[in-house]
Amino acid sequence: MADYITYFDGEWVPFSEVKIDPLDRAFLSGDVVFDVARTFNGKSFRLKHHIDRLYRSLKFVRIDPGLTADEMLDISEEVVRRNESLRPEVGDFTITQFVTRGVGSRTRDAGPPTVCVKVAAVGFNSYVSLYETGAHGVITRTRSYSPDSVDPKIKHYSRMNFALADLEAADVDPEAWAILTDTEGNITEGTGYNVFLVTDGVIRTAGSRDLLQGVSRGMVMDLARQMDVPLEQGDLQPYDLYNADEAFFSSTSYCVLPVTRVDKRPVADGKPGPITQQLLAAWSESAGLDIVDQAQRFARG
Image (tube, rainbow, N blue to C red):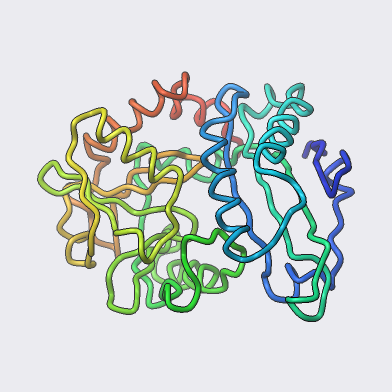
């Protein structure tokens, strides 16, 4: 694996030299926020959207990174530039920023914050085959955090429920991706991806109260408007997903990924649906490359 040049607490170092104090509150209590963008043909995509969301999270949890949002944006672009010579081998990068509260036994006394911006190869091999076959989903008993406890609009690493949901999904179907619900049983999101379904030509997704407002989720909404495809936000039950005409996930790396099976039941005819395929084609046009073709070319076994 390439040892990518990384921004770490004001220095440019190989990623292998990034070391976080075990007394940092990121380790002690998951007291860290982050964001992840990606490049297409080496150009960052909607990076400002990701940085803006990162700074909303930072403001809410009261961590001052010591950098303005514009400075974080510039550093993120610089990380991509410094590693450009390594990109052709892997296709494209993910760009991750994370900010911890720093070392301290009590939250109020911790600091200074730890700031890191890094790139990594897009993990095409983890999902490339699913563009054709579709992903499997399992609706887990493990729930999303209640917004009365932790606001889901904060993108943070305190995600033990995601880890448990992933294990639970694998118990049901070793190939499955977890789909979580709220305390009322309404579908919320996956473990790092938003969930959509299509019914009678209408794209449907959960409302924003109980889930992360994904940048890719916003891209799907923008593309739906451009394509004149109706889109609704609101409560969705497992019943709605079982009876959908199509389903798909959205996330930074794969953009749009068809879902063809949920709880071992086929979604409609068990094949990726036409609106899902249209969204992928429209996203490819916006990104300036064929998303599926790139994944197929750079996936490694």
